[in-house]
Length: 73
Image 1 (tube, rainbow, N blue to C red):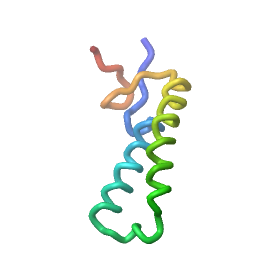
Image 2 (spheres, rainbow, N blue to C red; image 1 turned 90 degrees about the vertical axis):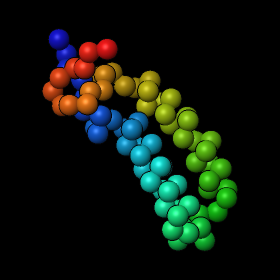
Image 3 (cartoon, helix red, strand yellow; image 1 turned 180 degrees about the vertical axis):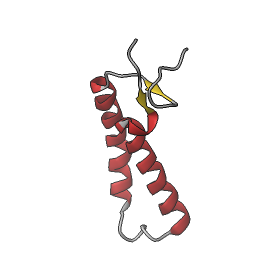
């Protein structure tokens, strides 16, 4: 039985976490507002779903909560 990849090693999850952290930082800290324009926000909103689809297509392993074992459905 093949083991799954730990969820923290998932590129899809890491990219989504990075975008979520960036969004929270922009919303709460107001430090990145002058650096990132509304066009950048729009670009991220359009590009992120495409990146997610591409990463999902190239994914070959299931994710697990613990490294080295496959979670049962």
